[in-house]
View 1 (cartoon, rainbow, N blue to C red):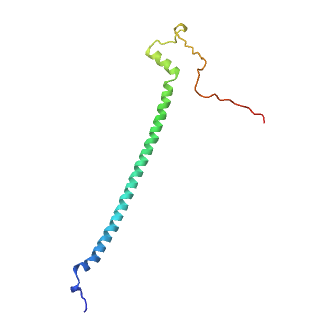
View 2 (tube, rainbow, N blue to C red; view 1 turned 45 degrees about the vertical axis):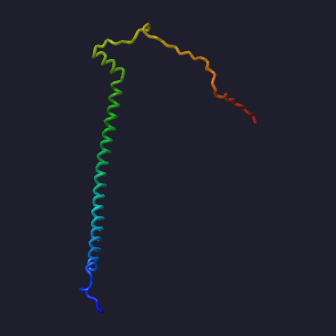
Length: 122
């Protein structure tokens, strides 16, 4: 008995179309995912470049501030500022100084074993 299309079920004719649709969705989804990943990589590259330039700028600013702080801490600058602010600061007199001496006593007993060095003349 010859089979013809009228006798075939609808599911048999629907399977190739479903395969084609699924294949198109798979390929299209892969392409969209690839494009999204490339866009994300580009954006991250832009952020990296911006942050690196900001880091370099902050390093330069930090170095400028270190230089400025060193200039402000120089004794000549401090003496000049004292004169400008009329603080009337001066060095202390010798009788105003208190000297503390530190005595070195003998070390107390320890629980550590004593180490001895034996020299051999071989």
